[in-house]
Image (tube, rainbow, N blue to C red):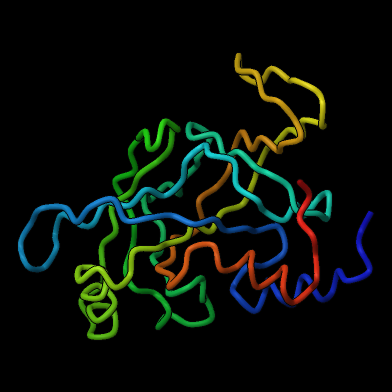
Amino acid sequence: MVPQNQQQIETALRSVGIHHGMWARSASLQRAASGDSAGTDGMEWVLSTELPAMVFDWERWEFVNEILLADGMMVPAVGKVPLLDSHNRNSAKDVLGHVRDFTAAKTGGYAGRNGKVHFAADADSQVIKQKVEDGHITDGSVGYQVLSSIWVPEGTEVSIDGRLFTGPVKVSRTWSLKEFSITPIGADVLAKVRMLCGTTPRK
């Protein structure tokens, strides 16, 4: 059932760059790769893991725990996605660089996906890069679209691709990586939506 505050929720999400059918979750800097001063090797970031995270489900219209299967990540044919400033996509000026060289990884015991962040050479992008290198910014966020998912109801277990998942949880089997953003606080989007709309996430 669609809640009465649907418009309020959509407006809040759009205000932070998340449009209908899209979502974001926090990511973190793993390490700055070795290389010359131009950073040709890029910076390696943990883009996503299979640790369940609270997201807003556009189909159920409620907050749910979601697991993004690591091997389900799809990337554009060109092999890279834009690096954005806090999910802003209204102007080409919002592009800080790109992310490529995606690899499988394991973080905190969870399977995941890493990628290397490459900053553009313009002054604004280099200012952000320097803040990352200096340790002032450590958070990022993936912007993605779920292509295939299975809802596991509470109190049940479902086998998905040979693995057992216990509900309540949304298991996103296939998802398309659209962009990666440098953000001041990785999970701030959820906090803003909850505070503005008074939505209580499902436990």
